[in-house]
Length: 68
Image (cartoon, rainbow, N blue to C red; front, side, top):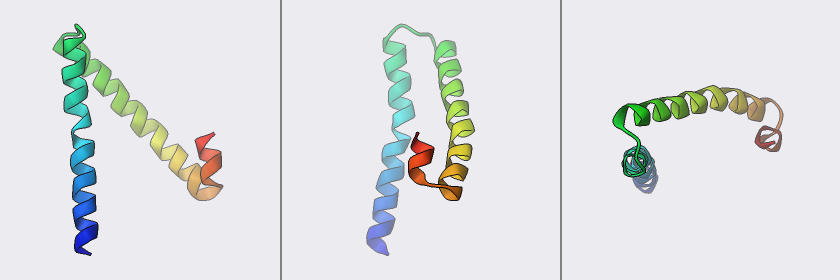
């Protein structure tokens, strides 16, 4: 159980680094903070909108179908 908790903690920590790193990268590429916020918001909304239906398809039919 302890190894599982360590793995989950490290996975969530690594996932939590993706947004700050992407924000810094976008700022270095010339976007201002408002543009970065818009891009991040759109990406988050698209992830939310696509994760729920693909999860449903994977549960109901097959995981390979949801990847297609």
